[in-house]
Amino acid sequence: MAPDDAPRKPAAEAGGGPGEMTLVEHLEDLRKVLFQSAAILALVSVGTWFVSERALEILIRPAVQFGGSDRLVFLSPTGAFLMRLKMSVGLGVLLAAPVLMERLWSFVVPGLLRKERRFLLPVVATSVVLFYLGVAFAYFVILPVSMSFLVGFGTEHLQAMISGENYFAFAVRLAVAFGGVFQFPLVVTLLTLWGVMDPGFLKKYWRYGVVVVFAMSAMITPPDVASQFLMAGPVLLLYGISMGIAAMIARNRRRARDEEKKQD
Image 1 (tube, rainbow, N blue to C red):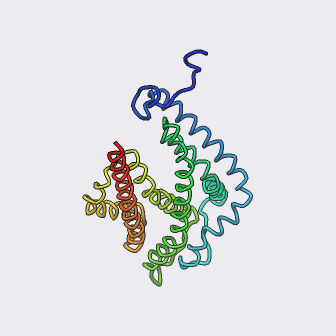
Image 2 (spheres, one colour):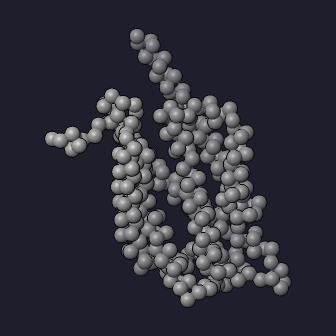
Image 3 (cartoon, rainbow, N blue to C red):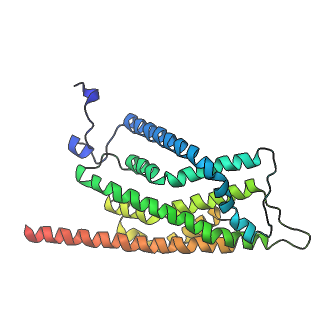
């Protein structure tokens, strides 16, 4: 077998550092992950086109209920078609999230030792659940509050006539932002397990963490205080959960080291 055809060993077995790969190998893996993810997403999105009309009606429900208007409008001949097309892709992302997350994490954690590979499935499952929770929180909590608050600035002669295109971009941005933010505990857990993050770091700099959370919330959410606090609250809760998980991992490691010393 030619050297180029030999199966690539984890770096720890090959004599290099953990996860050591060449730049070319990283780029090749990234190309494969992107191509496979795009193909999966395109395939699923074709199927979701047939339910995109109903899904779009569900998506705009908060705008109709809390936006002060009984319907949205589209401002160009292609507006409705493009929204349904984007809705198909959005549904494709939601339905294909387990596979897409598996592809993403398989690239993020390359070169794992064989005994660590069993953690990949729990990581993917947790990541998907957190993503769905973030999207659900954005739809059921943030969107209604944001629409009610922002539209409330209208006057007797200044009434809302919201375009579907603008609302769609607004809603998707919130959903993606919350789906990503809800990954925070998982990321902190993995960084702690890999020894990249010291468990005491989050506790020591928690004040700076609070400032960063509120600054991030201000950038991601609509320009209203209610939405910013609604995002900052869950993120701070996730921050606290992450601190607890990191501390638990550190205690377990200390206990394991103490037991090893006793055995020696």
